[in-house]
Image 1 (spheres, rainbow, N blue to C red):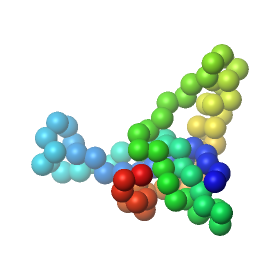
Image 2: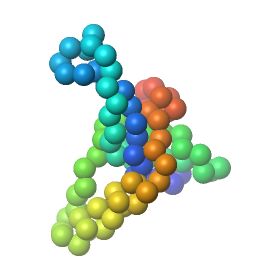
Image 3: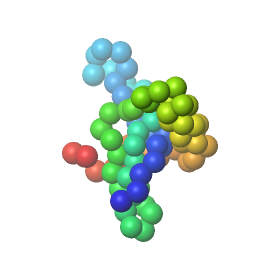
Length: 82
């Protein structure tokens, strides 16, 4: 199974009151693809760039920039209980 970083659009409660209207939220997640190349799973939580040294951090950030150039995926298109 292959993976990459992708921007995910979701709807989140506004503020601290979950009964209020939902607001759009965009975040970057790890997305995993099936053998046909279709996105099937995503990380539950958004991820942050990291690395064991500065060079690795720079490589990771480049992957984030690449994610911003890809079409946005919808959270609702992924199964619950990821």
